[in-house]
Amino acid sequence: MTQKRPTPPVWRRRVGAQLVRYRGDMPAGDAARMMGWSSPRLSRVERGVYRVSADEVRILCAKYGVDDSAGIDEVARVAEERPGAGWWAPYVDYIGKEYLDFIQMEAKAKTIRIQHPVVIPGPLQSPGYVREMITRALTTVSAERAERLVQVRLARQEILTRGEEPVAVHALVPESAFHARFESGPSIMRDQLQRLLDVSERPNVRLQIVPLTAHPTFGATGAMTILSFRHPWTPVASVDNPMGGSHTEGPDEVAFLTAEFDAIAAIALPVQESRDLITTYSEGLHQK
Image (cartoon, rainbow, N blue to C red; front, top):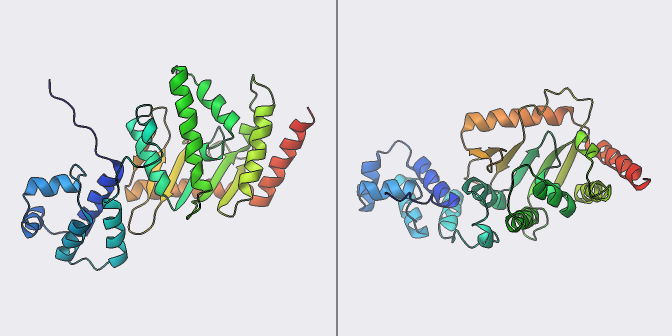
């Protein structure tokens, strides 16, 4: 039986895709000959199957006549990175490929726009809320895997507080999520609301509440995340699903989801009104 080859790491694939964009209209065969490579080798580099060095990135771009020194430097830098060097390395056996791809892209994002129509978005969840969402999920997982998934979601939140270039987050949170009731008691939501208030004070976070009065068509297409990166990487749009989501760099798809996000943001409460509403809910829970 033929063994299925593992999918190349997502950033190696992104390096290859950027090299394809830099190659432009030049035939692949011509590009390979210029490098002294075979056509299969160039193909594997562009698909991320083969690693390419920083020097090779620079030589390729010089032969392509690329006039983008900042972009070339960035692609060369990422080409040299070891794909398994992130905090997620101990968890790769517990998460699916699509989720791992998303985590690695999220970790490099410059801006993140995130919207969920039902629950508090993952980067803003409190530890207790994270545990409720994962351990009470409809899909059955072992206690060990559930605990690992909790750790992964909490570890992802370092993007908000990392010392160098914390990501700029624009989050749209449904007011309906504040009405959730948990068997563990009201402390779960009380802590979650405080988490939202704390996070919303960060200068890199813009948090808006989508009110109960909003027409249900806003957000009806499901949860989405739009990631943008430093030059020259193209934006990525991700749509949630139980298996880790699906991601696209297609400009038409990214533009469509960006327009969806902007439309929802336009009817969401302004930032200060959102904070005031969260405070009102929090005070109500503290009185119980």
